[in-house]
Image (cartoon, rainbow, N blue to C red; front, side, top):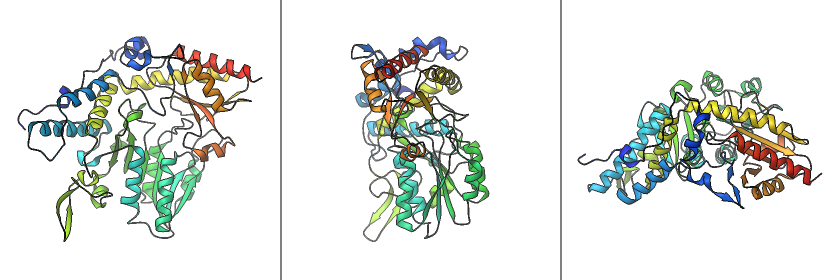
Length: 428
């Protein structure tokens, strides 16, 4: 295409700290990339520990969104004019960035959606609904986010199938022997989280996928809480579907990704009808578009895709290995310090965890705790975390959850510990 604009020219160049140095030594430089981290809340410096809900955006993402709006915006795929070509190149360039990020075989396997929730619903309705019959089975785990429970319950109601639940232990770990025992000849899909949003438990998903494939069962992995912390290779995992959201990966909200094995997507009917998912339309019938466009009805979130690509480029520049190493230190430090508070109990002590601590304090409701911490400028998440079955398992109505990103510091954890200790003392 003449005068085509590349994705790299749309996005601001991210600050790329030297990969030869530990991330901890460059935190000031990294934090400077996130304007919101200099915010004051109630006269106190912001301590943002709610990354499991939504992470913050670096300047590279903010600038990419602004530059797109100022210089590139037009509708994609349908125009022959200059701006439409530029926007299309940026949008499809973002798809290639995601493909590389997940190591998918083809861009045909990358579908842009609104987020993890929409991706799971798409698979449930497009893959599951035409195939499931009364008596068929869907397996999920007890640790799932509601987004990986409710769509399967709806599918079961529509088809007469049933949802079976793989149990967890008191540490918040998936019980593999019990999972294996759930498979029967009627099992049609396994849907599991990669990392629990409520507890931080990391599932042995490669082992789970192998187990399911031994029974001829495809697997969907909810990777919303995994992709900000660890590299994901869908070919190495051999998963059938992998889904995640941009807003937890330092990108915009309203954009997400469905990776689907090409052979499975090719056999799936569209979920929504409208423009761009068609090749031809007449009143006698419609011919659907090729992959991945048959699943992207209507005008897509073009700037969201551009912003997501910028976020991925930023994370890649820092290095997911370095990110994981620093976040592991933060998790260990927070676990040690919080455990020293009288009356505090950490919920979820799996051997393998992401950088998240869920906890309760004797005599203090989680919502009260969150309100007190907010007065100290500390942002955490309180409640059931869209994982009510997890709360029920532990006999709780809510927990407080501090979730860390690579831009967080040990000093911020010290502030958290001090504020929690003060709150606990108030209620004694």
